[in-house]
Length: 364
Image: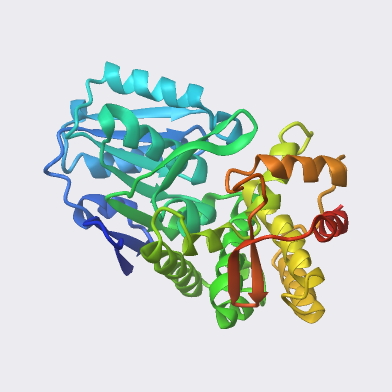
């Protein structure tokens, strides 16, 4: 097992990320739960049949049965709405949760985002623990303290910065994931290499994640978490350096939102993968990176099994117009996070409209 200890700059919050196999059964050994009055597990309809019972059993070492509660919502991005959060609040009230209760978010990125948001706002804030069951959640959503819900089709427009008490990454849970669900999380792994570690990018882009052995998978996840943690330590509230983590997400979020109305909506990681191609193309067109580096990036994304083109019906005009709704914009201007090299990036870059339109055309 690997343990990454996180201490966020300027505040006293510290927590650990535990990474290994078969960790759910040892939950009460990893984290002291004796100070909490009740445990409340938030999960979804896909994860619950596999892992709610093992988590409940592990919690029984610290809580009596009547002090363990759970809430299950329908799996998928469609549930990442304020209406779901309100339903969670109502259920929390019915179970008489108090400020000494602990919330356990069990699932992928949607669960940890929604559950973290509900926990951080109910009774002005309950402590919460994230147990990641998807690759995307393990390397991105569960670590760093961002929580949130969508506002209609606008991604993560409502949310908080709130750090978990601990994160448990049980790599064994990846074995139950459908291939598409597993591989979409790899986009965030590639992103971390592209913005911060060239050698790591080259290593992880050799082949799909599923082709690495379990020990190497744990190492990959751990390094990805370390990269994100190093960035978050410097800038918890995304005023500067943390914006590097938005690479691929400006266009990616637009594509993801557009796809909601299609017959085959994009997974978050798929949208980010296409977004990274488009945003790397912007960097190449503007001279920030070479065409050779751009081709390496696009090729790597394909090699690991992720898409580089958006195939649903849309247009350059539609995508460009929707970029104006990005929550990172300032003064009516799009603020881009772009690569300056493989392994390095720049935030708050302003780019001419023609380059952006050409890059969008490239992915269509």
